[in-house]
Length: 626
Image (cartoon, rainbow, N blue to C red; front, side, top):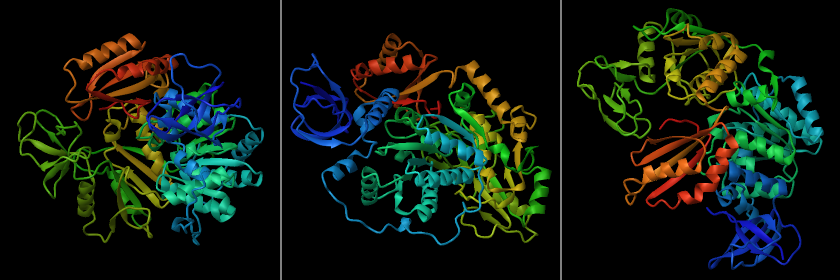
């Protein structure tokens, strides 16, 4: 009698049941008893022999039919292993609730969805051109029905979306099913509308902002193989597509591809593995591909395609950040010369500035989380953007007691004040920037990370003030992220425009790469330093967060470290303090990447025996900072 391992969408590992059938039920939806209730689940493995460690094995109550391919089940098992989490936790990502509603005939009432309505205005993708050689190469690979990963160094985000659209249009005519993934819901909607105008109801969306009825109707279409083009966020990667022909991931280095909930997966790595297991090509695009992806291209794992150099780009100009004022004289001249053509000035933070003590040199930081406090001069308060601490601005330094505390760095408020002073006698418009600004004339102010994207080049000049802030972030990816911020906004600038970066150290080696778009030199520089410091891609890093409860013993952390040292052959750093005082974390690092993952998977259940703690695991953490 065959036995089956069943995964239930709960925080559980697989459970074993029997069923009187010789058929391989891998990927079948089933109903099984657990304690005093019945649960729906999925068969992920067949056993020919009864497991010796299980005495009482219950029977599968009902068989609903196959809902996932065997390759997709292998993908879920890989997710569970790689991200060190229960299979049930992974199953919750796969739209299982909607799938079961569909199988059980629980139809949802179809509603008119406002965001599906066509827009009459011209889409920004109209008129854009793509590299035809790149297009043909991808189409031909899809036709061969073989796995391959392409890494495309793209000139801009709109280029990536147009490439997606052109490939989708061609493959749709061939009857193929493709998955298009973008980091933001706004971009998903834009591409969806563009494709639906051309391909109609065969195009569907999948993102976390959809209502339950919309989500159900989309999954119903996918289950019935009526959806040929699926456009979505990382959320869509787990769609139950039967015959997947291609996956394209836009902006592959974007931090939004890292899930915040468990399992904390990276959509880029997961997309590559799904493509490998399902035997279909994967295309990664970015204006600054991640260092890890470039390393894979250098090693021959990915095919690198340089479309960036095929198109013109704004000139990058590095100038010295003045000490006595905000703007370099060359920048100030450009503000005055080009304000009628549009100038965008970027600040790294909100508020007026930070506060630094002239005596001890310390920047005032939050006592709870250690992040720099933002000074708001108009309201005379200091705030922490991380933990929302708000207090009156102190008269003395919090560290040495000196009264010599002064503003340092530049925030949005300081930019406003400086620009209004400079242009007070000239009728020049100064505004906050958002993508809905109809007339780009005057000077606009924005903050990195809070600018709502526009896809058309609108400005003659883009200026980054106080750029050193991005380089000073204590993260091994600080330079990569800083360069990425510049390129992510460069498509707002006309090709004959200028991008100014103000820095205290314009002769620094890293700005040689920025100035001339010397990407290969930049990657080689980064890889050299990461290899010396044993950072990815030369080692795997796993972050183990430990939350202490009131019932935890005083020596529990020491015991945990001893336990980890005895079970895992890796470098164990910590315990280190987390943002919240009751939390600590360990960093596990090893050059033997698979061995580290295997060791942690084997001992994770034993970690649960330590009383008074809860823990979370993050593989390939976004940051090593607390």
